Length: 374
Image (cartoon, rainbow, N blue to C red; front, side, top):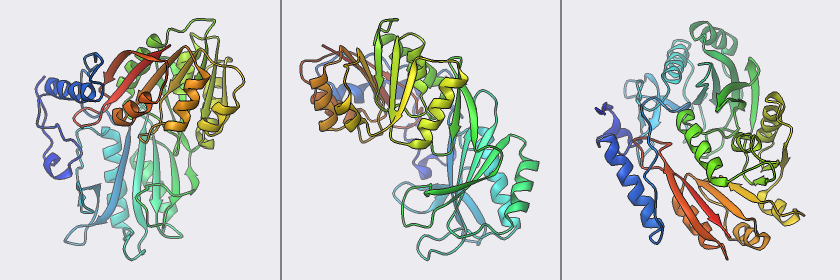
């Protein structure tokens, strides 16, 4: 495969491996996972055929350049300088186009960017989610002011110029935080979500719901995880970080029953909708903290699926999981370092399989599947 080179990768810092042959990046990622599990055999990384423009979720931050021109981009590594990458090679092309359109329209309307230092201005971030299946997009406009000046005109023009947009959500965030989204939002166009399909299952994705950024590789990831879970029609499953029910619904196709737990109410609402829409009646979802839910669970599931945030599950949860004693644990992680630490807390389990999957081509990040069994 001949590499395409992004003109901004050395400044942006987002794609640490952009100047390296793709096959070599897979070797490097396997080597990293192997260093965390030195006593285990690590499979070759499952790579991507066309590792470009895969990100279906794109963020941009607004600011002024040196000529006081409104720009949108990402922060330069280790700084708050905005780097403009209008043709980013890992971001979805539709998302790139929508952000460029929003920037141009806002500039013409003289809508000022938000300044974190002075807490003044309006436009703070844009966040786009694009459906791999339909090409439709959800746009979230994050502002740091009480109102978005000329919002009706702005929204009308965006929809007219970007027929891919199926919904626009306005989000308020005026706090000194690195978080993109604030707590309050309002649907200003469409229904507030975008729909996508992975592995024949349809998913509704709201602005604050978790959904993997690379749908092509996600299908490979979940197919591999479900195969390694050894499910059949007698198997009961607990998905302890279920999000919008993605892997839960994959598992439900093969298992007797799946229980999904997620602390985000928006995600649970989407998960319940997704199960109903797909006619899946053996998946049940609960809005709760996985750690406390585990303590109250009466029956031990045969298989536990884990796909936590980068911070991992922690000692308390893993210790309780050991005591509960499911036959099989399939742990998916975007941070193999915390994954390795979490797995070290298990007692009376043996690691049987380690399979990295390249969800984030050209970056240093690796998604990793580990199977532990009693």
